[in-house]
Amino acid sequence: MDHLDIEIPLSCIARVYLSPWLPPAQYPNLKEWLGSIDGCSKLRIARSTLTKNEKWYDWGKSATLQPRSARSKRKRGTV
Image (tube, rainbow, N blue to C red; front, side, top):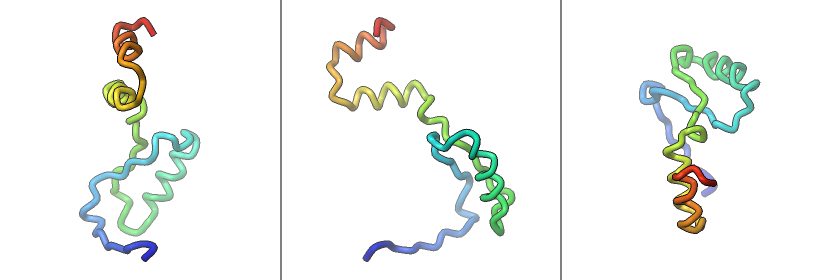
């Protein structure tokens, strides 16, 4: 099986977050286009800012194979 289609009612979707790597110039058009889909005019659509979140950035870095000494220097602001 290549895929599985599952119907999800629009009433179950509170918000749509678009990729933080979406070029900023494309965001307004994509947001408008998604809002034009039947039943989506009131859907909240936002561009994710996850990649700009320092806490998530630090967590991601700590999950890499980066030496502990380099991580502690970054926290002290020396890297």
